Image 1 (cartoon, helix red, strand yellow):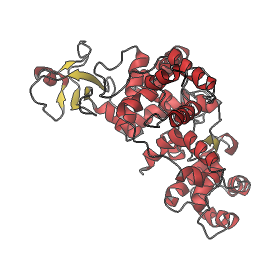
Image 2 (cartoon, helix red, strand yellow; image 1 turned 90 degrees about the vertical axis):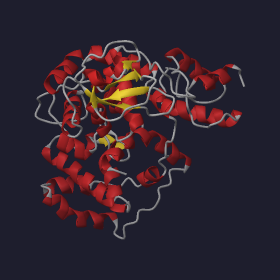
Image 3 (spheres, helix red, strand yellow; image 1 turned 45 degrees about the vertical axis):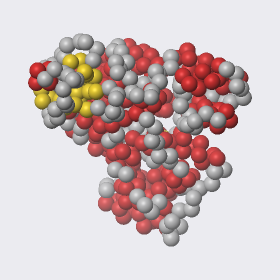
Length: 409
């Protein structure tokens, strides 16, 4: 798995991995190194010193570290998600995320305007990424599913054989961050794989793409989101090729004849009969775009370089589409005009609350009835689906499950 994809996916599946580990009784799969952990720490010392980590820092941090061997079970229990595109998007572009994103846009208006002016990255795209990665900072302040990063990375670097070189580099990156004084080891809390903060940076991203967004001389993905926004904007530009003053794309309608390919200007696509699905004019006819239809029979898009920039943050089409759609919904735009085949509409906030209440009334624990879809609600739906024989057993919090719950059976 490419490092960038691992970085993003680490958070998205960490909570489910935690639940899987609890099913296993917390058992950790054995580490594979022939060295004891203290022996390995000594052997690893020269590599840290070569990266500029002082003896004092190394002794303080690694001398007090006990490997978090529970990460072996968490890593090996990661499920392979093969859900339909419509379901992936619906799960993430929820009413709760849209409403919360709009509230955060007001709350942090000065910050996102400053970042947009300085870097040229659309403010709503930044909000979309923030919502996708950490539910607008919720995992920063509520560490229910987070764990200390240094013990986790140390365990993976010491005893995980398949990607040991990757984990070693990330542990070294984390030690360099501590050496620079950007964070101390107790602050570095994240997913089992080391992704941290508002936009879930791995240490490598933090170290090489981070930016001091609030001028305090430090770079941190924690605390106020200033640094996280600045660093994420910088990442999109430098690694994604983000273009200032361009959109990500548009849902469109195609003319009845054929489907030409390649990159063309929006103006050229218009001459071929392509129109926006919502009937609005294209705002920037000079943009270069290509046609993309992720699912046959579903919505069709013209996507620009900025869609590829978002995809650089997580190289999955479903992730990129959900992120840009969430950004547009926070901006005030509507749902897709053409729905995905076989899909459901997104349940409203009140419908999710009702579903959670019905689950609780039938003896399942959704973790509250606040309209937010967290791992407990997903697990409760999955258990309900199993009990009543609904297929597939996917934990999807949707209209069909709500309708069945309303029947009281």
